[in-house]
Structure formats: C-alpha cells, structure tokens
Image (tube, rainbow, N blue to C red):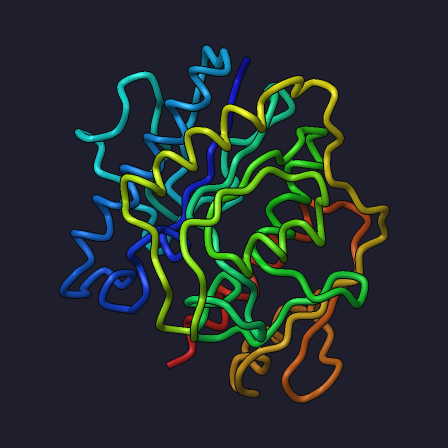
Length: 272
C-alpha cells in the first residue's frame, strides 16, 4: 500500500501564532519539532495499517520545516520549493491514499491561522462559485489522480470544513479554535495518539473509498486583498479581471487550474 502525506503546520497542536509558523519566528524551531512528531504519528499509523511505501511532502511556507533527522526512517521526504504542484507535488495515480496532517481552515472563515495558500495576498478562492480552502483544492488534485483523501488532522473547524467536502473522512481534532491566534490544544502526546489511531482507521478497506472529484469545466475566481495584486495577475492574458479585486479563468483540466492558481499567487506575491 502506497501512502502520500501532505503536511502543513498551522493545524499542529501547540501552533497558534506567526512566531510558530514564520521562518524567522522566535518559536519556529519548536513548532517544526511538533510538526515532525505529528507527521511521525501519521506514518506509524499507516505502517500499522499495512503501508509499505510512504512519501511525506513538506507543504508549509518554504517547505523546509520537517526535521529530516527526526523523521521516521520508513518514510521519504519531499521538501523545498518552488514545486509545480506545491502541497501535493509528486502525487500520482500510483498511490492508494492521501492524508493531510496539520491543515487549517480556508481564508475568510473562522479557525486558527486561517488562510488559503498565501495570507499575504489571498482573500478567497472560488471554484464554480464554491469557496474552497487548501483542503478542498488539494483533495481535488488527489481526485484528479483517482486517489481518495481519507484523513486530515487540525482544529475542530477544519474537521467541519473537511467533512463538508468529504463526509466520510476520518479526522483527528488536536485543538479547538478560539480565535485566529488562540486555541485550546491537546497535549502533544494525546495529539499524536489521535493521529496514529485515526490514520490506521482511515486506511481500513482503503481501496473501497471514493476519491473527491468535481466535473469540469472549472471556473476559478481568485479574490485578492488589494487591487494591486489583481493588477499584477491581470498582466497574464489567461486571467480575466472580473472586478477590482478578482481575476478569473476557466479550464477543463483541474491540474491546469491548480497550477494557474499557484501562478497567480506567485505573481501577486512579487508585488511590493
């Protein structure tokens, strides 16, 4: 059984602030340790469920957060950026299941450290008029490859967001969101136990589970936080300006859509 794990940091127990998530944050190194330990718990659960190959994609920020020397020896680590498929780089139809660790809610919703890909530039992303966060957008890539997304860990509101997309998904709730920068956290040990147990349950009869898919064509609207970011994205002809803050495009292929979303964000992030 081949398993793919995409790991973010905002949904990790004990992570609540930019001091934890930003590369130059004073507490970032400690948060990296917590992240690595939660990923290891997921790996352990997958191994107990019968996995014989596991790839972990470091999916936060610089994508150089997981501590390689502390990662479980049975997993391989994909790290660094840029990657064409960012948080789901390397995912193919050869995997049996996708699991998300340390995820968070979408921009514009409640939830600890909520954002969608880039809190600096993105207000919201809509696919066929549906607001979607990183969970849904990444799960659609898994669905493109006909691989089911079976597990997610993070806060209570992220679990609700995930179930709205995939009702049968297994989740590990490791903290309860109070505000964007406050949460009631389980102990790291309890969080790791829930992740390991939830992972193991999620992989039972995994080949009978249904991938998350939507029918194209896909009309994607990217709403930015200010007009300057939309100005920059609009330079590329495929992005059509639909209002002062928003660009949009339509494409039949979800993989192309995902890359176009990532491209628009990189363009916007280049604006000073």
